[in-house]
Amino acid sequence: MRKPHANYAQLMAFRAKAVEMGYPSLATAALVGFELLQRKAHIFIRFMAEHYRPADRPDHIFVINYKTGTRSWEPLFDAKGEPLYPLLMSELDAMKIKRPTGGLMLRRDKNGRPWASKGEMLTQVERKAREIIDAAKLPKELTFTSFGRHGGATVSKDFGLTVLQLQEKGQWSSPNAMPHYLHGNDDAKQDAQLKRIERRTKQTGTSK
Image 1 (cartoon, rainbow, N blue to C red):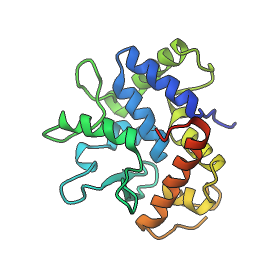
Image 2 (spheres, helix red, strand yellow):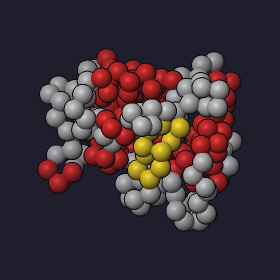
Image 3 (cartoon, rainbow, N blue to C red):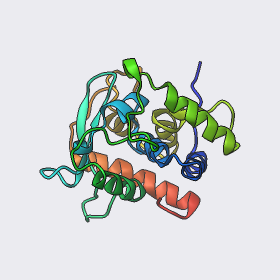
């Protein structure tokens, strides 16, 4: 059964309602998933503050494919020095300031605890996401996962990314789930994100 995916407008509606309801971390988490094609487990369990713009790589973010163990440093700026993820970076920059000792980047808004419970379960994420989705009057079939890897990948394909660019960005490892790995160079990754921004700008009038 095909999992439901969210489009960009639905993502932004979810994010706005999440902030309104007091869950800005879920708004940022949804954007992380959408922009970087990340699974829920990576976003809430493996994404550390030190993975974002560390001192030795201030222009990159470290992305891990939680399922396959594939990992790479993704560029945050294009060849001209322009940010590839301006909205996401503004939120992560502000969030990292609150993480002076490192550790998990995405934490619960009310008490700073991890979103994952015992056994690395993310039930609370989906529960709160359901409340936000319903409050935003979005389609009932959507879940938090709809805004991440599924939504971002589907929209990216619609926006004209090649299969190879999608595979590189999403870290797929097989032909059936998308075919061969690309070389891990910044040029291909920058080009992929610039295509997404260009198409999004034409549709919405904003790159954010």
